[in-house]
Length: 153
Image 1 (spheres, rainbow, N blue to C red):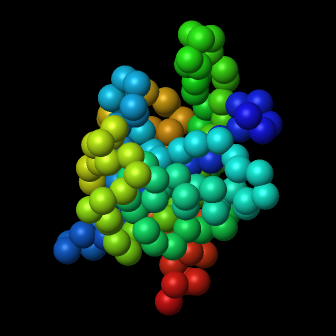
Image 2: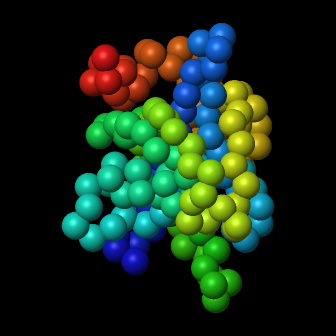
């Protein structure tokens, strides 16, 4: 595990018919809690590329990932032996263009679109909930999201 406790996550997003932001969450494999697609940093990969791979493997989401993180959050990762490793997760915004019907972890996870507020109510981590609530109000005001939108236009 590179850099003890350093993980990356993609925050897959889209706009609905009313131009409201929705975020895609997946269930964790162990407890079934709603989480973002995330994983360990990958050797030789930029963190946003690793986040893009996690989004594809865990949620079947394809799209554009921002190169600037939108924020971080911390949690205690329970390892197979029962020990808990404190982890910091760097979150990268992702605009989803396509959801695959068939993806690597489809039999192990559920995925669902939520408003950022509804997603914030379902996560255990306070700083992740705050990050999601910021998106509920004015997502285009977040610098990392603004850069991603500008890059795509």
